[in-house]
Length: 72
Figure 1: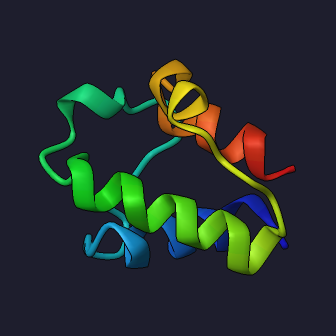
Figure 2: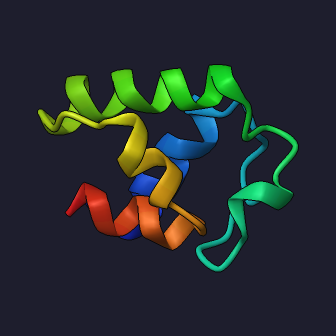
């Protein structure tokens, strides 16, 4: 899966429009970065990437790039 496909998947997960999410965006500046988005991210990582994501890991994510790097 390419970086752009991963960004598209995150946009869908966070219910954002296409092109709204950029790698260098700070998560705390995203209106969509709320508790539901975090829960959705946990499910996404488990379903699509077979990775377990903890609350501590989520807290360590500062930018969209951090999430993308975790997806690798």
